[in-house]
Image 1 (tube, rainbow, N blue to C red):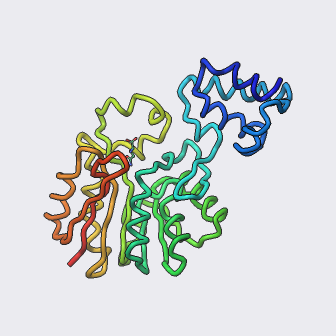
Image 2: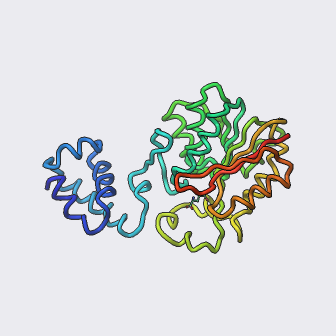
Length: 267
Ligand code: GLN
Protein backbone atom coordinates (compact mmCIF):
# COMPACT_ATOMS: atom_id res chain seq x y z
CA UNK A 1 0.00 0.00 0.00
CA UNK A 2 1.11 3.57 -0.59
CA UNK A 3 1.48 6.31 2.02
CA UNK A 4 -1.41 8.22 0.43
CA UNK A 5 -3.69 5.17 0.45
CA UNK A 6 -2.98 4.43 4.11
CA UNK A 7 -3.60 8.04 5.14
CA UNK A 8 -6.84 8.00 3.17
CA UNK A 9 -7.90 4.73 4.81
CA UNK A 10 -7.77 6.19 8.35
CA UNK A 11 -9.16 9.62 7.48
CA UNK A 12 -12.46 9.03 9.25
CA UNK A 13 -10.78 7.68 12.43
CA UNK A 14 -8.29 10.38 13.42
CA UNK A 15 -7.19 13.82 12.15
CA UNK A 16 -4.80 13.76 9.19
CA UNK A 17 -2.12 15.66 11.13
CA UNK A 18 -2.05 12.91 13.77
CA UNK A 19 -2.13 10.13 11.18
CA UNK A 20 0.93 11.67 9.54
CA UNK A 21 2.81 11.77 12.86
CA UNK A 22 1.99 8.11 13.52
CA UNK A 23 2.99 7.03 10.04
CA UNK A 24 6.30 8.96 10.18
CA UNK A 25 7.00 7.19 13.45
CA UNK A 26 6.20 3.72 12.10
CA UNK A 27 8.16 3.97 8.86
CA UNK A 28 10.93 6.06 10.39
CA UNK A 29 10.89 9.00 7.98
CA UNK A 30 10.60 12.74 8.48
CA UNK A 31 7.47 14.71 7.82
CA UNK A 32 9.13 16.24 4.75
CA UNK A 33 9.81 12.82 3.22
CA UNK A 34 6.27 11.65 3.92
CA UNK A 35 4.86 14.78 2.25
CA UNK A 36 7.16 14.59 -0.73
CA UNK A 37 6.48 10.90 -1.49
CA UNK A 38 2.77 10.09 -1.09
CA UNK A 39 3.30 7.28 -3.61
CA UNK A 40 5.96 5.63 -1.37
CA UNK A 41 5.21 2.00 -0.55
CA UNK A 42 4.55 0.89 3.03
CA UNK A 43 5.27 -2.75 3.92
CA UNK A 44 2.38 -4.90 5.19
CA UNK A 45 4.06 -5.07 8.62
CA UNK A 46 4.37 -1.29 8.85
CA UNK A 47 0.81 -0.86 7.63
CA UNK A 48 -0.37 -3.21 10.40
CA UNK A 49 1.65 -1.34 13.05
CA UNK A 50 0.25 1.96 11.78
CA UNK A 51 -3.35 0.69 11.91
CA UNK A 52 -2.81 -0.54 15.48
CA UNK A 53 -1.55 2.91 16.54
CA UNK A 54 -4.45 4.62 14.77
CA UNK A 55 -6.87 2.40 16.71
CA UNK A 56 -5.18 3.32 19.99
CA UNK A 57 -5.27 7.02 19.13
CA UNK A 58 -8.93 6.73 18.14
CA UNK A 59 -9.53 5.18 21.59
CA UNK A 60 -7.98 8.25 23.23
CA UNK A 61 -4.27 7.61 23.84
CA UNK A 62 -2.16 10.75 23.34
CA UNK A 63 -0.10 10.85 20.15
CA UNK A 64 3.00 11.84 22.15
CA UNK A 65 2.83 8.58 24.14
CA UNK A 66 2.23 6.52 21.00
CA UNK A 67 5.25 7.95 19.19
CA UNK A 68 7.28 8.43 22.38
CA UNK A 69 8.34 12.03 21.93
CA UNK A 70 7.22 15.67 21.88
CA UNK A 71 8.85 18.96 20.96
CA UNK A 72 9.39 21.64 23.63
CA UNK A 73 11.33 24.90 23.20
CA UNK A 74 12.75 23.67 19.92
CA UNK A 75 14.08 20.42 21.40
CA UNK A 76 12.71 16.93 21.00
CA UNK A 77 11.93 15.15 24.29
CA UNK A 78 11.33 11.50 24.98
CA UNK A 79 8.00 11.04 26.78
CA UNK A 80 6.37 8.00 28.35
CA UNK A 81 3.17 7.65 30.37
CA UNK A 82 5.36 8.21 33.47
CA UNK A 83 5.59 11.92 32.64
CA UNK A 84 3.30 14.80 31.76
CA UNK A 85 3.42 15.61 28.05
CA UNK A 86 5.26 18.95 27.63
CA UNK A 87 2.92 21.82 26.82
CA UNK A 88 3.55 25.03 24.96
CA UNK A 89 2.48 27.33 27.82
CA UNK A 90 5.28 25.94 30.00
CA UNK A 91 7.76 27.55 27.59
CA UNK A 92 6.89 30.84 29.37
CA UNK A 93 9.00 29.62 32.30
CA UNK A 94 12.00 29.07 30.02
CA UNK A 95 11.55 32.61 28.65
CA UNK A 96 11.59 33.96 32.21
CA UNK A 97 14.84 32.13 33.00
CA UNK A 98 16.44 33.35 29.77
CA UNK A 99 15.42 37.00 30.21
CA UNK A 100 17.19 37.37 33.53
CA UNK A 101 19.83 34.65 33.71
CA UNK A 102 20.51 33.14 37.12
CA UNK A 103 23.36 30.98 38.36
CA UNK A 104 21.72 28.34 40.55
CA UNK A 105 18.37 27.22 39.18
CA UNK A 106 15.95 24.68 40.66
CA UNK A 107 13.13 22.99 38.70
CA UNK A 108 10.55 21.37 40.99
CA UNK A 109 8.56 18.44 39.59
CA UNK A 110 10.64 18.15 36.45
CA UNK A 111 8.72 15.24 34.86
CA UNK A 112 10.21 14.71 31.39
CA UNK A 113 12.90 17.24 32.32
CA UNK A 114 11.79 19.54 29.50
CA UNK A 115 11.92 22.73 31.56
CA UNK A 116 15.25 22.06 33.31
CA UNK A 117 16.89 20.83 30.12
CA UNK A 118 15.64 23.68 27.92
CA UNK A 119 16.91 26.15 30.56
CA UNK A 120 20.26 24.37 30.84
CA UNK A 121 20.58 24.43 27.05
CA UNK A 122 19.82 28.17 26.91
CA UNK A 123 22.01 29.07 29.90
CA UNK A 124 25.15 26.92 29.69
CA UNK A 125 26.78 28.72 32.62
CA UNK A 126 23.89 27.99 35.01
CA UNK A 127 23.87 25.10 37.46
CA UNK A 128 20.50 23.44 37.09
CA UNK A 129 18.98 21.07 39.64
CA UNK A 130 15.78 19.16 38.89
CA UNK A 131 13.64 17.37 41.46
CA UNK A 132 10.85 14.85 41.00
CA UNK A 133 9.05 12.51 43.40
CA UNK A 134 8.77 9.83 40.70
CA UNK A 135 11.80 7.63 39.97
CA UNK A 136 10.22 6.61 36.66
CA UNK A 137 9.92 10.27 35.64
CA UNK A 138 13.52 10.96 36.64
CA UNK A 139 14.70 8.11 34.43
CA UNK A 140 12.98 9.75 31.45
CA UNK A 141 14.40 13.17 32.41
CA UNK A 142 17.91 11.74 32.71
CA UNK A 143 17.65 10.15 29.27
CA UNK A 144 16.53 13.49 27.86
CA UNK A 145 19.43 15.35 29.49
CA UNK A 146 21.89 12.83 28.04
CA UNK A 147 20.30 13.15 24.63
CA UNK A 148 20.65 16.94 24.69
CA UNK A 149 24.11 16.77 26.23
CA UNK A 150 23.35 19.03 29.18
CA UNK A 151 24.46 18.50 32.72
CA UNK A 152 21.52 18.74 35.12
CA UNK A 153 21.61 17.43 38.69
CA UNK A 154 18.56 15.17 39.15
CA UNK A 155 17.27 14.45 42.65
CA UNK A 156 14.49 12.13 43.79
CA UNK A 157 12.05 13.43 46.39
CA UNK A 158 9.09 15.52 47.34
CA UNK A 159 9.42 19.22 46.40
CA UNK A 160 12.17 20.75 48.57
CA UNK A 161 13.03 17.59 50.52
CA UNK A 162 16.09 16.64 48.40
CA UNK A 163 17.56 20.18 48.53
CA UNK A 164 17.43 20.66 52.29
CA UNK A 165 19.75 23.49 53.34
CA UNK A 166 20.43 24.66 49.75
CA UNK A 167 19.62 28.05 48.27
CA UNK A 168 18.95 29.04 44.67
CA UNK A 169 18.76 32.20 42.59
CA UNK A 170 15.73 31.02 40.64
CA UNK A 171 13.12 28.37 41.39
CA UNK A 172 10.81 27.23 38.58
CA UNK A 173 7.92 24.78 38.72
CA UNK A 174 5.11 23.41 36.61
CA UNK A 175 3.38 21.66 39.52
CA UNK A 176 0.06 19.83 39.47
CA UNK A 177 -2.67 22.45 39.76
CA UNK A 178 -5.95 20.97 38.57
CA UNK A 179 -8.78 20.60 41.12
CA UNK A 180 -9.46 16.91 41.91
CA UNK A 181 -13.10 17.22 40.84
CA UNK A 182 -12.37 19.13 37.61
CA UNK A 183 -14.17 17.31 34.75
CA UNK A 184 -11.14 18.19 32.55
CA UNK A 185 -9.30 15.29 34.25
CA UNK A 186 -11.68 12.76 32.72
CA UNK A 187 -11.52 14.15 29.18
CA UNK A 188 -9.09 13.79 26.30
CA UNK A 189 -5.36 13.23 26.58
CA UNK A 190 -5.05 14.08 30.29
CA UNK A 191 -6.85 10.81 31.17
CA UNK A 192 -3.65 9.00 30.19
CA UNK A 193 -1.22 11.29 32.00
CA UNK A 194 0.02 10.72 35.57
CA UNK A 195 -2.62 11.95 37.99
CA UNK A 196 0.18 13.02 40.33
CA UNK A 197 1.37 15.53 37.70
CA UNK A 198 -2.08 17.05 37.27
CA UNK A 199 -4.31 17.04 40.33
CA UNK A 200 -3.62 18.90 43.56
CA UNK A 201 -6.41 18.86 46.11
CA UNK A 202 -9.90 20.31 46.08
CA UNK A 203 -8.89 23.68 44.58
CA UNK A 204 -5.80 22.48 42.73
CA UNK A 205 -3.66 24.65 45.00
CA UNK A 206 -2.23 22.09 47.45
CA UNK A 207 1.18 21.78 45.80
CA UNK A 208 1.47 25.46 44.87
CA UNK A 209 0.86 26.26 48.56
CA UNK A 210 3.69 23.94 49.58
CA UNK A 211 6.04 25.36 46.98
CA UNK A 212 5.31 28.97 47.96
CA UNK A 213 5.67 28.11 51.64
CA UNK A 214 9.01 26.37 51.13
CA UNK A 215 10.55 28.68 48.54
CA UNK A 216 11.65 31.47 50.89
CA UNK A 217 14.05 29.19 52.77
CA UNK A 218 15.54 27.98 49.46
CA UNK A 219 16.09 31.33 47.75
CA UNK A 220 18.92 33.78 48.25
CA UNK A 221 17.78 37.35 49.00
CA UNK A 222 16.70 38.74 45.63
CA UNK A 223 16.07 35.21 44.36
CA UNK A 224 12.93 34.56 42.34
CA UNK A 225 10.18 31.94 42.28
CA UNK A 226 8.06 31.46 39.13
CA UNK A 227 5.49 28.75 38.52
CA UNK A 228 2.71 27.76 36.15
CA UNK A 229 -0.88 27.58 37.39
CA UNK A 230 -4.48 27.08 36.29
CA UNK A 231 -6.50 29.49 34.15
CA UNK A 232 -8.54 30.65 37.14
CA UNK A 233 -5.81 30.72 39.82
CA UNK A 234 -3.95 33.94 38.97
CA UNK A 235 -5.51 35.98 41.74
CA UNK A 236 -5.20 33.24 44.39
CA UNK A 237 -1.55 32.51 43.67
CA UNK A 238 -0.59 36.19 43.65
CA UNK A 239 -2.22 36.46 47.09
CA UNK A 240 -0.28 33.41 48.30
CA UNK A 241 3.02 34.95 47.17
CA UNK A 242 2.13 38.29 48.76
CA UNK A 243 1.20 36.60 52.05
CA UNK A 244 4.51 34.70 52.02
CA UNK A 245 6.42 38.00 51.76
CA UNK A 246 7.33 37.93 48.07
CA UNK A 247 7.69 41.28 46.29
CA UNK A 248 7.67 42.38 42.63
CA UNK A 249 4.93 39.87 41.93
CA UNK A 250 4.54 39.47 38.17
CA UNK A 251 2.26 37.47 35.90
CA UNK A 252 2.46 36.28 32.29
CA UNK A 253 -0.22 35.34 29.81
CA UNK A 254 -0.04 32.22 27.66
CA UNK A 255 -0.74 32.24 23.91
CA UNK A 256 -4.46 31.97 24.65
CA UNK A 257 -4.23 35.22 26.65
CA UNK A 258 -4.72 33.48 30.01
CA UNK A 259 -2.63 34.49 33.04
CA UNK A 260 -0.68 31.24 33.30
CA UNK A 261 2.58 31.96 35.11
CA UNK A 262 3.10 33.94 38.31
CA UNK A 263 6.22 34.76 40.25
CA UNK A 264 7.84 36.99 42.77
CA UNK A 265 11.11 37.94 44.40
CA UNK A 266 12.34 37.16 47.87
CA UNK A 267 13.27 40.56 49.42
N1 GLN B 1 -2.12 22.47 31.84
C1 GLN B 1 -2.39 21.10 32.17
C2 GLN B 1 -3.79 20.73 31.83
O1 GLN B 1 -4.69 21.45 32.14
C3 GLN B 1 -2.12 20.80 33.61
C4 GLN B 1 -0.67 20.75 33.85
C5 GLN B 1 -0.35 20.80 35.29
O2 GLN B 1 -1.16 20.51 36.17
N2 GLN B 1 0.84 21.22 35.57
O3 GLN B 1 -3.99 19.72 31.22
